[in-house]
Each structure stands twice: as C-alpha cells, then as structure tokens.
Length: 433
Image (cartoon, rainbow, N blue to C red; front, top):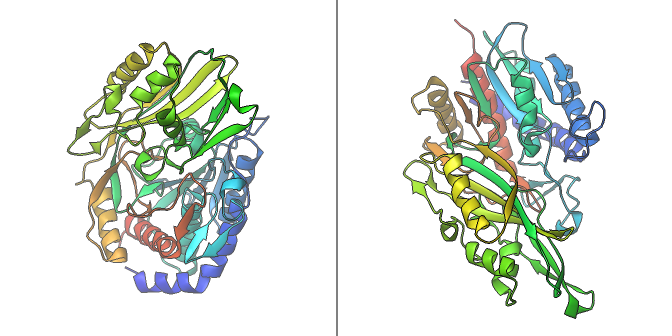
C-alpha cells in the first residue's frame, strides 16, 4: 500500500492536525439539557457543526441529521464502508485536571484534553486520513461514509436515530475501542436503584456522575462533623475497566462502621477492590470474553432516598435478563427497588470475515505486531451493528485515563490512528482494477 507516503504526510501535517484537534477539544460537547434543535445540548451541536464544516472543506458530501449525526460521503455512489465516530464527551471537572480539560496540551509526548482519545482524537485522525487520500490523489473505486454522532456517551441514541432512517453499509468500523480488532464486546447492564433513607448521623452523600465511570470522589457529611464534609479520593476509570481505577464509593463503604442496614448491605455486596460482582452472586467468565465486571458507580442522598447506580459488563455466554435478575435480587433483599434499566446483549463478529481479516492485515503492516482479535467490556458504537467491529483508537496496554482526569493519547498512538485509517479505507475502498 502507500504506507511510506502516509507517514510522510503525517510528519508534514502534524501541526495542522494538532491545531484542528485543539479547536475541537475546546468545545465542551458533554451532554446538556436538550433545547429546540439541539437534542444533546449546545456543545454537542457546536462540535457536530465544526466537524461538518471540516468535512465540507475536504469536498465531502455532508449532511446534518437533526443535530444527532453528521454524515459525510466520499462520492455520490452508495458506500460500501462506514466509519463511525462521535464528537460528544463525558463531563470533566477542571479541579481534578492538571491542565484545563477543554484546552489541549501536548507534553511528555502525549496529547491531553477531554476527548483526546474518546473520540475527538480519532475523529480528527479519520478526517486527516480522508484529506491525505484526496491530496495524494489516491483513487477509490468504492465510496465510503464517515458518520460522526453527538450522543454516543448518553446511550448511542444518535446512531439509533440514524439507523431508523438510513441503512448502514455492509462493512462498518469504529475508532471507539481498541487495536488490533475488537470483534467481541461483552453485554452491558446499567441499573439505578433507590430506597427510603433515614439516618440521623449521615446528613449528606454525593458520589458519581456518569454511570459508566468509576467515581474518583465521594463526599460524606455527618451530624457530628458540624457541617464539614469528609471526602474520599479515589481514581477515575472507565466503567468497563474498574480495575484501572480506585472506586471512591466502595472506599467509603469499606470504612463504614455504623449500623445503617443499607450501607452495611452495600458494603457486603461491593467489597472495595472486587471487580467481578462475585459478592452479588455474579462473577461469571468465559473463554472468549474473560471475566465480567461489576461496579457501583453512583451513590447519592436525594430527597430522603439513597440512590445508586451500577455498571455491569457480562460475558457472551450470558443474557441481560439473567444478569439483571441476579443483581436485582441481591439489591431487593436489602430493600432497594429498581429505578431505571438499560441493557445491551453481547456482540460478536467472526474472525474469518473479510472486514476483520483486512483490518488485521493493516494493523500488522502499520504496527509491526501480530494482529489478533480481542474482546473487551467497553460498548463501542458498533455494538448493535451486525458485522461491525472496533478498530482502535487505543492500544489495550495504554493507561490513557479515558473518562477520567488528564485524559490523553500518546502522539505515537495518534500517528498510528491516522496511518491505520488511511490504509484501511484505501484497502477496503480502493479501485476495482
């Protein structure tokens, strides 16, 4: 393929890429209250429009579908490939960051900023891969479509909205997971629960934001503290990788010595440092997806009720109804009732598909490493898309603080993103000659 030319292009245009990424990171595209024409808030809409204008400047045929997704086509013909990315991000607390989260910084050979790895960095890498293909005059015999959503972090309703109106091509990849090729994704259960709460000693409790993020802070107020709060400080991580964080909620529960039955019950169900839900009656694993994960990610006192949230990622040999039944039973015995439930079944694409084999070949050429399929607990954009796989944007061994403070992507990984997507698009959509 054109690997050397792509490498030269990256080296020559890196500053331009960083400038574009800096402008996109500067937009706080985390979810805000919807308003007319802005289903995910003004920040998401602004980020989508930024991406659309950039795509238009490349000569792509762009469309804005109700500020939910931006669609950009290489040509007028029907696309054979879709690349899915998203411009929205999870919220960021500036107090927890070394540098402002919505101000891109490059240090220690890494790009820092909210969305640098999930998913603004990969979005810019794909845009510049398209720009490179055009400027080098590399012909494509087949068209492809780049779809950028604005609501991935709040349940992927944006892609569902699109899929109800237009079919997806037969081949779909997303830079919303891990290299080499993520062809198997665990199922997911997001459950919130609550119970009446009355305790003269505990007067306030706040922990957790996004249900798919390990909380790095838990603030507790007690009657005996005369209004002063005690804060438990942990380490944030993605909800599908609780072992990469230090859960501030379970840290508080592990130290709780009082008599409140709700706290004591949760302490037993969610021991600090346990990640697989074994104490809840879960703890499943299989040979393809490995061990499941289970994390208590929210715990708050609200209007006289103790309210919690749980993030569960379960193996491919289980169903969401089985997992939900077990966790609801455990919570119910403590007196909790379910408030909301969001589930996804596991997703799997065979290793011998043309798409997977092609992407593994691209990975081996670019990285110099052996290409193999992997399974993870993260829910990517293609989770409910038949035949879709995640291709990047991170390497499994990287600690990039995704969804946490000081989120970053190594410059070397950003470079590989660009090279992988340029080569993948060229190989999958190249000339018919």
